[in-house]
Amino acid sequence: MTTYYVDSNATAGLDNGTSWTDAYLTFSQAITSATTNNDQIWVASDHQEEVSFDTTYAFGADVNVICKNKTDDSNAIMGTGGWIGNSTTNRSIFLSGVSRKIYQYGITYRTAGTSAENIRINMGGNSHYELEECYIWQGNTGTAGYIGFNATGDKLGHTRCKNCTFRFGSVNQEFRLSSDVVIEGGSISSAGSIPSTLVELTTIDSTGGTMVLEGMDLSHLTNTTILGSVTRNTPKISLVNCKLGTGMVMIGTQTVLNKATGSVTMFDCDSGDNHMSFAYADILGSIVMEQTIKFTSGAANQSWKIVTTANCSYFTPFVCPWIDLYNDVLTSQSPYLEILRDGSTTAYQDDEVWGEFAYKNTVNTTKSDFVNDRMALLGTPTNQTAGAGLASWSGESGTAWSGKVEAGSITAKEIGHIRGRLCVGLASTTVYLDPQVRV
Image 1 (tube, helix red, strand yellow):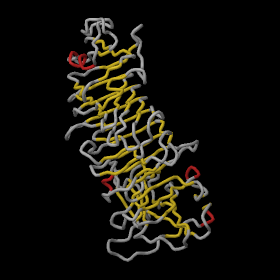
Image 2: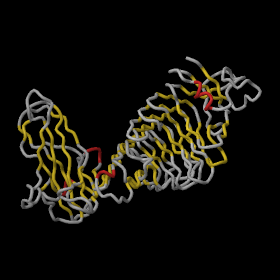
Image 3: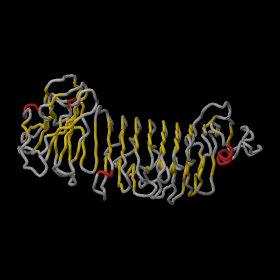
Image 4: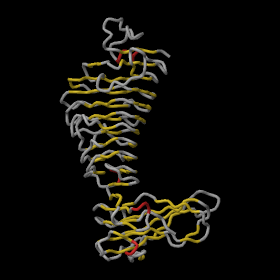
């Protein structure tokens, strides 16, 4: 293992990377030299590198890149005081290398200018990148610029960013994915523009993937759509314990009207101090937490407000996430979910709204079987069963219908979860669901 030093201020040295005095003046020189796994590249915290053309940093080994304080070699963070890239001119920065494990700490990558320049991380394919306390500064104001996590071609890629800051230079910029991305902590910088869309997949530079944002400060994103237009593969975006901006929208308008346009799931995320919320959206509908209209003895003092789009039907229903009930009873039970239709006393029928349930129906195995109360294919619809009644709900308009969807009589053969979920095949309707499986 060898340590290579990088400092743009070491102009009086030998430029051979062997010490702070004789440090390389450019990051590229160090990457060219670092050809052995676990080589270290130490970059001075006040290093300011102005590249003269679009630059690809192609790592040839599993390298650790660490920002350092030159006075005592302590770990440091560049922030906005140092950078690799350019502060004035149109330049793109690409982090590449095939089948590599790359760790970076405290490094700032910066673009500038007015044309469509971008920063792309993990481009080479089959690589694992770990970025910690880094600053990804998209200072270019071009409307087609972006921050990308892009494993090229059909290659795999995983990137984890821990306590990193991301900054955009235009409201028309966004994240683009063609790999697996996890962002833990960190923020969208309030010093930059507010993107109208956070993630968009419409070009070859964004061919799908997953993105998990956990504990991230997104409060700068006022009225931002989390997942915008999608024409390439199926992105799955998850937000956990994030601080949201006001007016954020889960999914925007799509031209491809099926579930391949992806989904957004949010656990315990809010712009204020409301805790234990849940939200989900795909092209067929959405779920948000409802605290006004709710089952009075329901789960966590809330209901799920389900709103379907014009795209769902009996054959392509909006399907809620599973709700679990731990079960240790091996005798006959009848699981069900309570639902409410507000503004109408007309019962939902079993071709419009139905339940699906999964339980362990075979001894000596973990395998589950599925049952539902959906109308038989090409059958005749009937009303769903009446529920607990309006006295068991609060906040409804007074003109409402209380119902339930149920599994019928089942007998679990093994201890484990009974799972239930609501399916809505009626387009452009609103259903309130108590998110608790009862027996």
